[in-house]
Image (cartoon, rainbow, N blue to C red; front, side, top):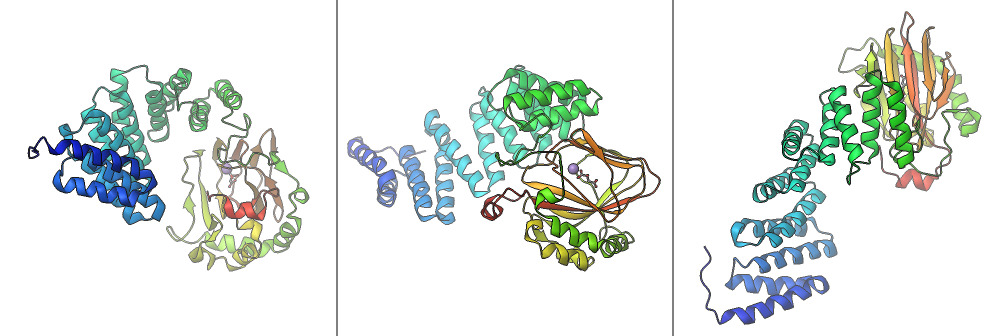
Length: 431
Ligand code: LMR
Ligand code: MN
């Protein structure tokens, strides 16, 4: 418990505090010194502890210093440690800023601990519980998020925010398309803040598709277009540059990358031989299963050579000719794409899906192409040809079938969309 202070000290200290508080934004170093002075005599003064945290927070920004930032995080937490000696308003302010700064610093686990303290202190505040669920999602703990959201919906059955997130988790983590779709539908219908989001429209449409409810899925995608979360009902990438020409299929020449395609086509047998030789490698050295749950049935594996514009050196030693051809062509070192061999066995169906971004074009070089394999992009379905490229924009809805009787092998090369500038190649965040 704090030591009782002589009453006469209070007015002058309050004056100091107000003065120091005004200083935080203009001169955080001075404010910090004043706060420390106050705390020396009165170590449990909540306002001074909060002022100290704010000063350190400002200094961290001015100095661009992580050490300072961490000091400010611990200082905000010291306010919370006062527990019932700090009023709700200040507790709330300190906690929210503390969480924000922790997340900024990448301390997601610590942020969750603060969120749990908020829930414990304000058990009737739905917002804190919903935000705690988001904290669990951000730290890849969907089971914990699910538990929180189910608790929220027991008490507040109408929370659209909780509904849409619970549906998202049931669909993406538990593969429960039916319950996932029901919750996401209800959540979107609430139109609460945060629910009109492309991720929910996308997973809802996908869940409906997998349930065979194609017309409903198409209506969701059309709604998504209307709400502006998608560029169009069948171009549903979420990381986009708006001005780019959008069409499902591209002529090789129209991409401006014709000479590159010609060169690889001229060398296609060597590329094929490198790809085929990889097939005898055992896992984990060799091909890896497609990992995004896109398969309805069958067997589809990939061998990655480049990801986010960077070479996979270990893999490239096993496909040196292919990697050298790629490496010498900057548009193919696309930070928003990959280069990989892709093998698909008979009996495979890949659910309709879209890639994450409209910033790349996806080129497939046919290497081993039996009959019975085909690719739909938008409304047009094509097949591969050995030694030839086909080029499409995988931000459009696409779907693959292989009903033949032997494997199909292609080299997938993502290239920057030809209308992006080389400055944009630098500045766009990798995907
Ligand atoms: C895709 O990019 O989704 C597929 O076309 C890949 C493949 O191997 O056919
Ligand atoms: Mn795809």
